[in-house]
Image 1: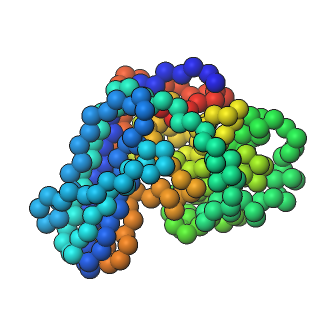
Image 2 (image 1 turned 180 degrees about the horizontal axis):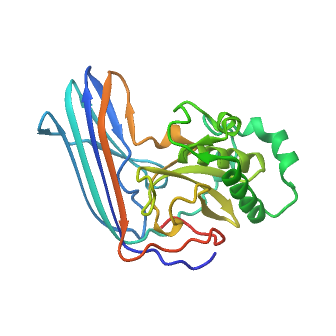
Length: 273
């Protein structure tokens, strides 16, 4: 694993939405709670101007879900965090090689078993295959906002030849799983990302470490801040609505580093810090 420098980072998110019928909302916008991380943060949720205190659920890899109920009204969410020290690398757990080789809703690896045998040498070292898959996805896809639907999976993305960050990540994850390399999706804050938004990347187990992969190349991997981790975007959505009707009026995401952005040559094995 190459040594990399992770700079201090400032991140924030704002959501403005209208709830038209009673519902339960879940947010995944807070920085993951992990050992080694030093962070100062604030989360404010109001419904028609009245403050709401959510229930916090801590899930896999420090993922934090903030759940609250709303009858109706305007919901404003403001989150900000100053990350002064990076998190320790997330360890590989005993069950990870099982869970993250399975096909999932948006990373349907079982559809790619035959395909990968024609595109890659299955006997290559996993670290080499990781680089090959990253380059393959970067070449095959064009980053084009609006070109995909929220229900598109990796097979749809490959056929379309275009997508956004979650589509890139899903295709990387599906191909890696089909190559017998455990892989998963991570929602992150990504300083340097343009257009700025919540970002999605992939992680793969290489040499018993979780290594981050971003075929979009939109942001240096050294600057990423982990939010949520899961099998695919079904596990990592920044907003889930469990009953009523909601309308998203607006959102804003900001992520910056202290000083200059790191330079990412794409060749180092980097863990999200």
